[in-house]
Length: 177
Length: 292
Image (cartoon, rainbow over all chains, first blue to last red; front, top):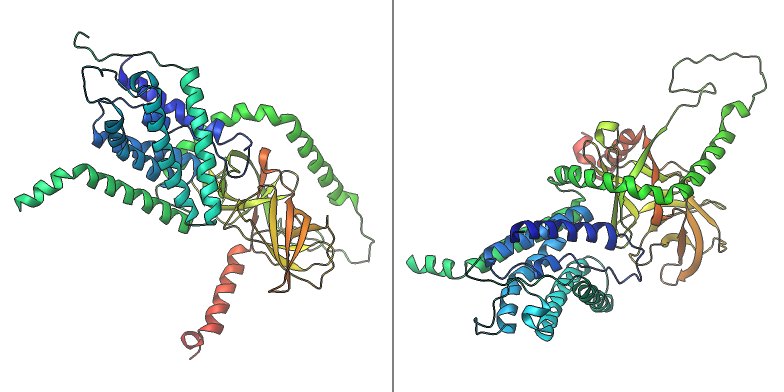
């Protein structure tokens, strides 16, 4: 399966899971909405250019927005993490490229600790920015902080569960294929 | 000039980011202010189609509960039928043959259409739901939406040809005029964005004797909602010392967790009432333009 086809399938799957399962389950608490759809952006291949990352991020958010009827909210947050992603990857991956020939971010490709940091930074940015935009309309500061912390915690839990349940096959970038 | 081009090319990604970010925020704020966006009509059709497919499956899980509720409403409607009642003959025979009037000379003020909920959220602070009827089936903005057991659900804020979007009671900008069943005082029902099981009823003066469990109905002074539909029951009462008004916590009558069948209710005189209201304001508050 080519990268393109695989990512399109992944996109559809993440959006459907987010809209029809995570947004629909009886919520655990009023502060917590579990989010996982943005894992699609975290999993995009390293080879995607920064321009394309921005465009893909924007439209991922926008598609989810049309389901949740909040045009712009998730789009803004996704765009932010799509913009920050290359910087974080640059810091966390080894500079020596001969060691490093995986195609997309994963615990195997980056080691568990750097990968966890990568996921954590982008998760906090995504939730922080999104809850901030919601908070501008309503709510108080304590609500804002609790909401960011709790949604971040539950999303991290979901992402690592997903990583452990569905280990992706390791694909190498090689000259031969 | 060359330097400008170099500068733009150097930070091209950043400029793309800024531009898209501005577009996203523009969507967000223009939508929230007016509850609609021009492009939403098209997207509404698309998500509506996917939502209807999903809904076909989801409906099976709550069929039993829904049937029970429909049956209960049907039962109460049977009791209301006019053939259950008779009038003493007073010697005068009035014949009416125009449809909008019934034989007692009462005219029809509200009509109701059934609809199915195809998408609904309760975990946001601004919750909307989508119904499978739109402007092509006669649904328009500002119509009231009542659950299948006669409890208030929300009102229509946007329509596309085949779907319509409803602002549910669980929306921080929703306000509904409601009155106490026992004494008839009129207040406003709002939502604080926290617990989807509870609403807030404001502006009931402290002189009213309120007991927990009292019923709250839609009021007679609303343009959208027909009077007498249940909004909720009082779960907790607090007195706001500053205003001398109660702040009452209402348990919602509608169960927003598993809404499926709803009625969209149209006030046939809505336009006339709203127009009169606006004209009055214009005439009284800005008299120079209308009176010579």
